[in-house]
Amino acid sequence: MSKSKIEWTENTWNPVTGCTKISDGCKNCYAAVMAQRLKLMGNKKYVNGFEVTLHEYCLTDPLKWKKPSLIFVNSMSDLFHEDIPLDFIQKIFGIMNKASWHTFQVLTKRAERLEELAPYLNWSPNIWQGVTVESDQYKDRIDSLRKVNAKVRFISFEPLIDEVKNLDLTGVDWAIVGGESGFKSRRMDPEWVLSIKNECDQQGVSFYFKQWGGINKKKNGRLLLGQTWDAMPEIGAK
Image 1 (spheres, rainbow, N blue to C red):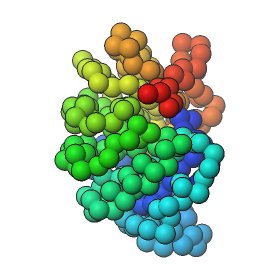
Image 2: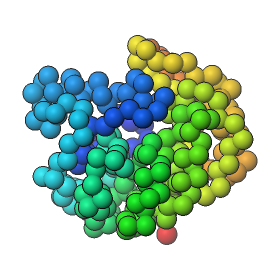
Image 3: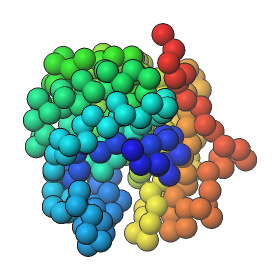
């Protein structure tokens, strides 16, 4: 388990590392850069750099962590990447099912494969499933998410690189919004953020504003309308 600096989680678990870019939000992928850095540092987990790599040896790790925790699954990959076999995904879900004292957050851009494989997975109440929607172009991922039998469904509008219009949040419990960070980061218009917040308010969805991003994300901070917005679904609610 690795402590995470991501504001909306506590720890990360990476039984798979590596990914490939599939949409506009992947352009400046932080995980790809970090994986290459870790490879150069001699980290054995990243000997293949950012190629999709399965790590069977760390599958059972969450069972050893006794303190209940919010765990972001595959922060350095995408669990529904086409190169990850269904049987390995089922093994990961089996561990999440057993480690019922933890809450697992799974996030994907591959919503079509998520929809395809969801019926073959055991969606225990401690598994939250999300999709990334970085612009209006990828809004159809929400339709796939709605078909998944997860107790908590969420959307990560990060990096938000364009407006998302006519947002239907039916069946969605939580929305995270954040701007891209780093030297090559793309600007996020405040109006895009406020539009999503207004839809969340009107449709009864928890709203979490992660960051403005930019070259100096710490300086730009997390304030929206003069305050922080940290609403999340209730953990462990039946």
